[in-house]
Length: 150
Image 1 (cartoon, rainbow, N blue to C red):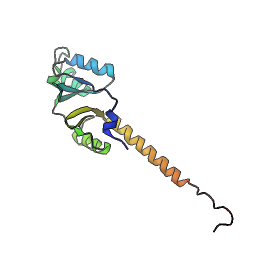
Image 2 (cartoon, one colour):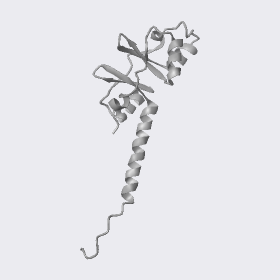
Image 3 (cartoon, rainbow, N blue to C red):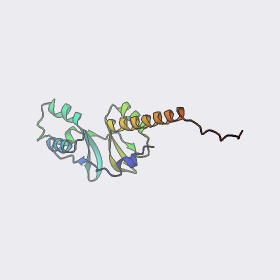
Image 4 (cartoon, rainbow, N blue to C red):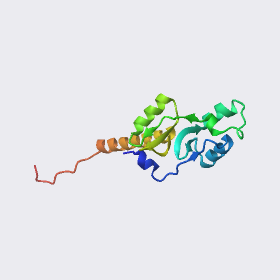
């Protein structure tokens, strides 16, 4: 069974500060191959910045990434979920909010960000396991009774 707490157990928490430049945030995200980073100020979640935010609010708007601060283009007060939620709930929240990255908290402590891709992989893994169990059940051959027993 999938657990958000377990998912983040050995993962680094990627974050940037609100006063970092968009250029530095983009470089940070590129080096780590991530599509979004939490924005922390004094250890508190104040926003999230994604590749889409950078494209729409900086590049397409003709702003200078080196002069633009993350604070100016981040999504402030992002939608979050508690670590106790299921992956199905996370998918529903993401669909309703039309987002691809979801910060996960545990008692006001940020664990990290889970992506739509991560959740779809969990869903696929569970479906593959269900299919395997069904196939095993269908092809199950009970042991034969020894001769002479009725």
